[in-house]
Length: 390
Ligand SMILES: Cc1ncc(COP(=O)(O)O)c(C=O)c1O
Image 1 (tube, rainbow, N blue to C red):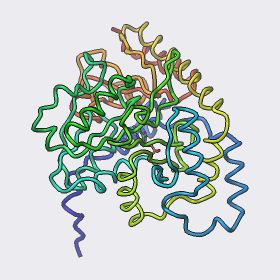
Image 2 (cartoon, rainbow, N blue to C red; image 1 turned 30 degrees about the horizontal axis):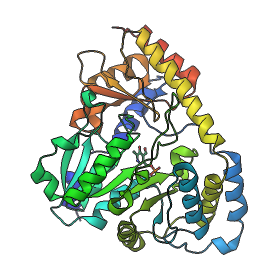
Image 3 (cartoon, protein in one colour; image 1 turned 120 degrees about the horizontal axis):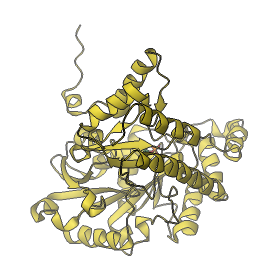
Image 4 (cartoon, rainbow, N blue to C red; image 1 turned 90 degrees about the horizontal axis):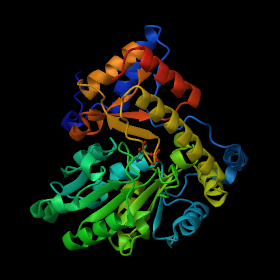
């Protein structure tokens, strides 16, 4: 018997990190000690005060049943409390917050909740790799908003042709951005609300890096913008804020119609998050924000070591003000893929080629700040010794 995967799979790209994992495994098998600056996976462990809650609650058999897909009230109340304290945004925990087993699945399922086949979804180019597959699988069409260096890697709404805007059903945004690290201003978010109202487009803002900001920057929530709740939702996650990527704990907040539509898709597909995980995440959200602040200071120190070190090698790096990523030009004539390959082979340093995030990522590379500062210094030293000096 021959098993033929569905035709729709042929439209999906190879998952970037599978490719990076393969390259890493091949380098390791050749005896190279790889410094992995590829994936944006927080390297420090989840803090003990969060793990303790999980351990205690996991022993309580009341939580061993199927969870509700909406999320425990304790969890949704904690999200609502955090949004109020952090952003001064009021959210009704019953109608305006949905728990998710990771924001990745949330952003991927959103087109299923809002788009009919053929509808247009506006997405940034380059962008987080999970945006395109959900749109493609839902049968919707992609229209790109270029993120250009000359615009500070922000979408230029005025350059979206009006026929494209008229046919768009949904716009995906992400600030601070992966991979570009761009931070959105209040003015930009106001323009988004106006644009969304003018063309009747739902907005999704993905904000998992809101707490990883440097140099005194403070990231805004889209939901702080007047009218935002009328047009859209925001995805947020415990993965990056509390070093909990493996726990799969996230949420979507904002417009109740969108929340309910996304909830309907989810309730038919997954069973929700293990409740002790939700209670541990609730403790994190209700607790002090010292941990995320310490992590931001740590990433800033790593950024300084990496960007300062590479600038000494003549790279002319763009220093990010947020996220765990340095998004900068390939410092030589090579393509981003060739350069990433050469860096791995000659220096044992793994980075992501910008082309993996969209066609306009070509010419750029993404370097993750997810190893200790000593290892970052070692990476710079190896890069220098391997001759990547300009
Ligand atoms: C922009 C963006 N959104 C969402 C996610 C996924 O986060 P989660 O762990 O909540 O699925 C990531 C992870 O790298 C990301 O970079």
